Structure formats: structure tokens, C-alpha cells
Image (cartoon, rainbow, N blue to C red):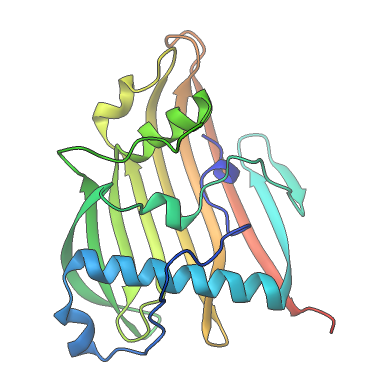
Amino acid sequence: MSAHQLFDTKGASVTFLAVFLTVFTAQTSLAFTPDQIVEQAVAQNIADTKRFRETYDFDTIKCVTKDGKVVKNEEGASDRLTIEELFRKNRYIYEIDETVLIDGLKVIAIRFSPRPNKQPNAPKGANTRGKVKNDILNHLRGVIYIEQEGLGIVRVVIRANKSSESIYVVGRLYKMDAILEQCQLGDIWVPEAISVESEFSYFLGLTRRAESTTILFQNFRLKAP
């Protein structure tokens, strides 16, 4: 799966009836369950994304490192993934790992892994590609790093579970490691870099491929009034 198919901030909209934008203290944040912390961080991210898209223009540079290809202002495919979709309700179980410092910020590291019971199905009407993507998401595990005070999502590190090797109907996903880095722009968190390394095949392992892709978000600037 290519990096531009993994994460996107386009088209995100606020879908929660109420988004908690209050700045939490360390004690307040840690008083919530891991599920509640992630849920509110995702809500915060949806609100930040909406403001970001309404307020700023930026450049996107896609680097496919295998052949050195560089594409500026990459326009993504329709099947990109939002953080909201990645962390859909009932997809993962969460466990607080530790509190760490990232660039001087206190950050809560929360591990996530596939829920052992029923996980979300692909959205109604999804095509085969959408169903495969949903199956892949149901097999991921990793760590989400959430700012302790403002609940901004600072970093997401993910990898495919070994059991995902056979989730394709006619292909296989052997490996997928991805990192999403965000940075603070004023009082909102915005994407800074996405890197993905993957190995997969489309036809029963006969055409195994490897991809290594990085997407950079740069030159943030206020939109003209």
C-alpha cells in the first residue's frame, strides 16, 4: 500500500456532535481511560484538520525512494485514509504505555492492537479495494503519541500484524511499517511527514513488490483573504 493511500487530511469533517477543545492538565488527561483519550484526541484532530484546510495553503512533496522519484503537489487517490478512519470505534484495544517527552512536550504513549472480538466492517457500499483496506486496518498495531495537555496527536507509529499475510483474497501483505509525524502550527496540529515501507503481492505471491515512500508537508502559508 502506497503512502498516499495510507493517510490524508483532505475532506475531513467534524462528525462528533460535540468536540472537546478544552485544554486538559496532566492529571485530567490521565483520569480518562485509554479509549476516551484516543477518542477525544481524534475529535481534536478532526477539528484541527478542518481549521487547517480552511486557513492554510501548503506544498506536498511525495518521494518514492525506490527509484528516487519526486512528485510535487501530489494529488492523492480517492482511497486515502484519515486518522478518523484509522481509529474507528471498536477497531483496536488501547493500553497506556508511558509518558515521554517529545521536543519538550509531555506526551502520552498509548499502544493499540487488533480487537480480539468483532471489529468494524467496511463501510456500506465499499468496493473490493475498500474492503481490503478495512481488513488491513483491522490487523494493525502500534503506538499513538498524544500531547498530554492539549490532546494533539503528535505521532502515530504502525505496523501490520503477522496474521495479515493472508488477508488479501488474491494477494498478500507481508510487511507494512508507517510513521505519521505532526507539528504544531499556531494552536493546531498539522501533518508534517508520512513515511511508509511495505512489501506486498497482488497475485498469490507471484509478483512480490516493495515500496518505500515519504510524503512531506511544507511551506505552510495563510490563504489569501
